Amino acid sequence: MHSYRLIVRGLLAATLLLGLWGGAANAANRDLNAQTDCGAVGNGVANDTAALQSCINTSATTKQAIYLPVGHYRITATLNISASNTTIYGTDSANTIIVQDTSSAYIFHVVNGSAPVDRLTFRRLNLYYSVDHPTGIAVVCENCWRTFFQQVNFGSAAAGAYLSSGLWVTGGNQVYVEDSTITNDTSQGMYFTDVGDVFLSNVEVNQLDHDTGSTGIIFDSGVGGIYATNVNVTAGETAFLFENTKGTVPPNFGFFTNCLADTTNGFGWFFQSATSMRLTNSWAATATDTGIIVFNVNGLSITDSRIYNNGGYGILLNAGAQNVTIKDSTITGNSRLASGTKPGIYVTGGIGNFQILNNKIGPADGFSNLQSYAVVVAAGASDYYMITGNDTHGNVTGGVSDGGTGTHKLTSPNL
Image (tube, rainbow, N blue to C red; front, side, top):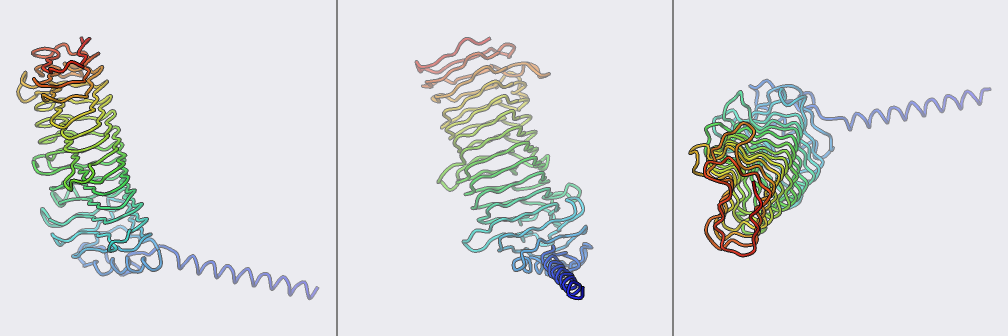
């Protein structure tokens, strides 16, 4: 009996000791609290720059996530992140706020020389500037891999035009922006270049109503694999811009589903340079100029979409556009600013390899007959194209005006 008691006591002691060790391990790995662990105040008056940077530096060693309780965290310099596996999160994106007081500084700058920074998460935060029309960018991410922005508000409608750019990503792969908003940017909401696989879902970019110089989202050289669902861009000059400023590889392989360009002061979708883009159940409406303008693009499909009420053309195919398909869509109410002067779709002379199939191009969905023609192919050597199966009745001047001189084309039947 005595030996049995000794064995039981030994087992209990070992269990207790293991429990203590486990508790110590859990305590060491718990999240850092920006206030209680790092000394941040979060009252909107104290300067929390050093405290938040201290948390980031500690996290780089311990790999602990950083939690910001409800508060206004005022900073006066850029918060720098160079370590992988960094997570910064708040209570919610309305009440956990980081305010940058220095116009030219970033809020977060993620970079580790030429090395990648992997597995970052920013969640439930509001990031904006306290000064009007700053030149800094809320978050700059250089060579970021597997990076998540979830429930992040860039900018503040209540504070006014307190954001130059929300997110600037150059290099890296697999960048996710989810359930987030960008408000009152004066340059661009988001900019991507040399990034593989960009995922955007449930994103709002609300630019200034009167702004004629800002762009909602820019996809520049080297962006490959764009997956966008439920993305809405309003106001500013242009909603979605595709360009190749570096002259390397244009943005390529983009899939846009339920994406809206609405009430812009220039263009809805501006394809300056791109390859293999797909717009499905998307929207280009109430632009002052053209809903969708296409230049040097090889491969663009516009399917089951709505091109409504734009000031000029609904869709303009310009120099360099090829392999463009427009089908099963409604194109109505365009030429809004001068009734009867612009068609729903205009194809510049000399462009070939396009299809306009099974669309409703004319009065529909409550919009009247403002468009001159449904489709105009300008005089020139356009060849290899099809314009068939479209309902083109009810436009001011007529249905299809075909000035193409090529011999490989099909332009009927249309209603």
